[in-house]
Amino acid sequence: MTARRSSPAARAGLVAAVVALLVFTLFPVYWMVSTALDPKASTRGSDVLPSGFGFEHFELVFERGNFGTFLLNSAYVGLGTILASAVLSLFAAVAVARFKFRFRTSVLIMVLIVQMVPLEALVIPLFLQMRDYELLNSLLGLTIVYIALSLPFAIWTLRGFVQAVPKEVEEAAYIDGASWFRMFRSVLLPLVAPGLVATSIFAFITAWNEFVFAYTFMKDSEKYTAAVGIYQFFGENSTAWGPVMASSTLVTLPVMIFFVLVHRRLGSGLAAGAVKG
Image (tube, rainbow, N blue to C red; front, side, top):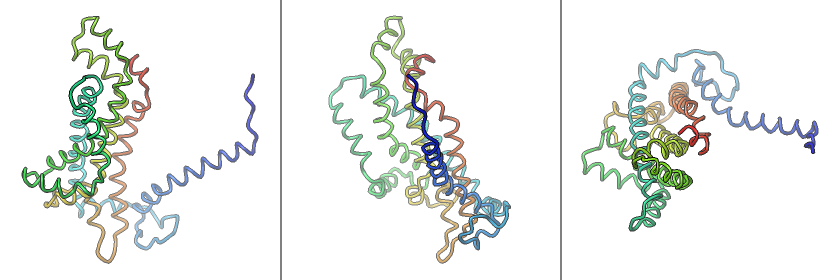
């Protein structure tokens, strides 16, 4: 039984919908990049096409805005958040999904409650805590805060991936003589790798794009992250839109590159992970 072909009108409508979706999604990116390259960005107005192309705004961002240092600070904080949150959340997810202990349900409920709390409500408590530990104006302290913010989502997400792995797979590894750590490394880790990639993307975006905590906790401008560095181009009475868009482009590129590098692993399923493991 053959499938009925769609009519030309239906295909045309589908193409139009896809094109409209692409335009709606990509137009802000086009506007950001084109404004960053427009030498007369401050007088561009609502013109769709830029007046020209140049890299003056990028040079200004690096030479006067010290944006290279800000990008390095964000990279340090982002990579630290990814590595620490991945390790901690994975072991925590295995613990709540595989082991039975007292107050396990309470731990899961607390993790979910923390995820529901608005970040703005945590600024003052975390500020006071970081002050008591003398971690204000420190990239390490900011990294610890981002790890704490990303852990609830990561633990809750990875718990579902760990629970989806059949226990029979682990038991077969034990029968073959594997220790728990050997089973974890060779069997469980490849199966939950897609979830680990998904939580790593969330942790990276959280650390890379976050503004409030980075701006509140840092006193020395040399320790600002890239998200805070953009703020310096906003004046009280005017805004330098060219440098703003240039710095925004520089902040967006690493996120896009990171996603391109991991998107295949993100889309892989548990079955593919079992074959590779």
